[in-house]
Length: 591
Image 1 (cartoon, one colour):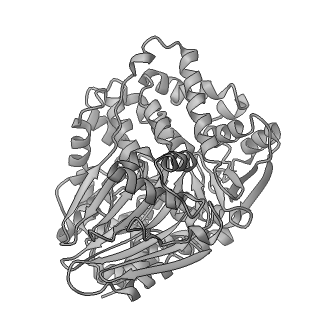
Image 2 (tube, helix red, strand yellow):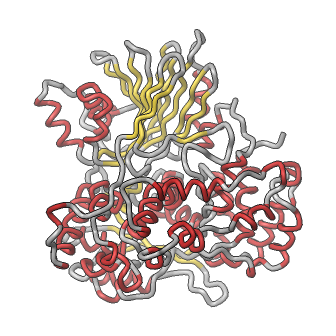
Image 3 (cartoon, helix red, strand yellow):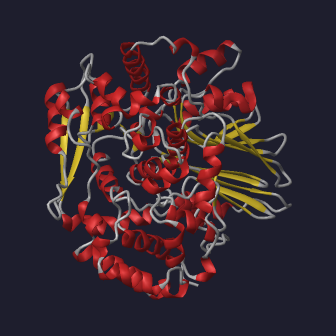
């Protein structure tokens, strides 16, 4: 787990090592254990290392294999690297290290672009071919590891975070009006390749980009998600479905224990993280777990300790219960925004940030329960999608923060666009491979929303603490299995029915049958006191007035009664606007 960056030139100039160094320096938190830059002519690669697998210097990066003529920088973890290494050794390859980085190099040499189809893990990498001069960029199937880039006529730069990319300079930092439409409509999600900034892009998940020496780029999508039962599942009983659910999850959590340092679990007290703990503890063994809580606001509890305690008592984990009072939350929120690769509005951002800072004092690697709601249908908008006659309209009503009419009331005329968010969802729903309305929604959420909301959130804030987060529900084999499960087995009894029933074999029923929770930071939902002042000041700042994104009468309406303006997904419309301005003021200097 690390931070990567680099530059490749398309003219006769040498790569700007100083720019690459600035990008690497901006990612010290992602990789506090080591650094390196390799520059040869028109290409420079940079790396920050967090030592997880092969703690020796043999796995330092950038890694250069002179015999094969390949160099690589890589961020992530390939969990099946021991098996791949054995397969490569059988083909005659020899290794000078004991980690997964060298396996990526050899695998690319052996199998070319198709090597990624053999990887089980999370990854973003850049491989430079010495003899052809081309650069190959790759990202894992579910986009767990990020990769941002910018391209001009003369060069392409890439980095693991958008703030790192910005540190190199030379990027158009104006707000992309189409991305702004997505941000304000599609629950703050800006699908790839766009970011909120016009000059910065992100590589889509499950994608390989081949960058030629003349600057031409070819994108290859190597994985997609198909819904519907496999032939061998046609006669499955309910017990068979439960058996396969636990089987794929057992394999996933066990794979994610591959490390040369201890691995713990973030335990929220909900079904998903509790099941991860239960599966890891089925055969005994020591496991460290971590939970976090906040002050209550407006009668809404800020912790779920009573549920995480049940799991801890059952499995005897070494548990760390972390309570964060409001006095710490506000300063941490500003630090959290400084580490955000993109504006992320969800209330739990600061929670993950603070939790990660505390966990990193004890461990370098944790497993987390993100992704189960999207692949096993745990959200409230899935049951109405089961037999929806108007799939697009039903989905928008539940998920969109604003309809197009309200969006036009928010944005000043120079930033207005067509309804790009609705067009995007319509086109995604129309793709083959998901025929039922609910499957269309699940596919969209798994391949887009999940990646650019909760997954991005977890990567940003754990890596800001030098902490690696592994997400077993997003093992691609788990995701592929979940897509085969009949929808009615997912949405029954308020959702995630199959997962709940399978989990009864492993974890206490009290955790399964509890009311659905959410990683709560109530102070950001209700925007009172110092948090409201923070939002008001951001929207009144000279930089905000100069930028002129929002119509003042709309902003005033929200400020007059913040708690009256809540999105269908229970977020604050005022905080959404304020967070965007706070992010821009932090990362984009005033002109």
